[in-house]
Image (cartoon, rainbow, N blue to C red):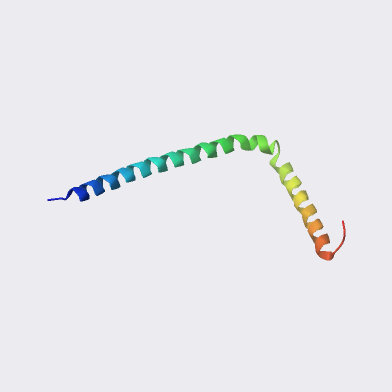
Length: 77
């Protein structure tokens, strides 16, 4: 005959698994919601032509590189 301890342990394990699966499903739903929110906001953040934004980012990176090279060379900006 199965002891009461084994039955209780099996029931507790099953309950833990059910709760963990429900929490995992909720977490995945929350991540999907946040992903959709970010996708909706992305056009507002870019605000126009992607090629123009890329040029601005490249210009910013070139400026940063120029500053870092000046620091490495010991030039005071």
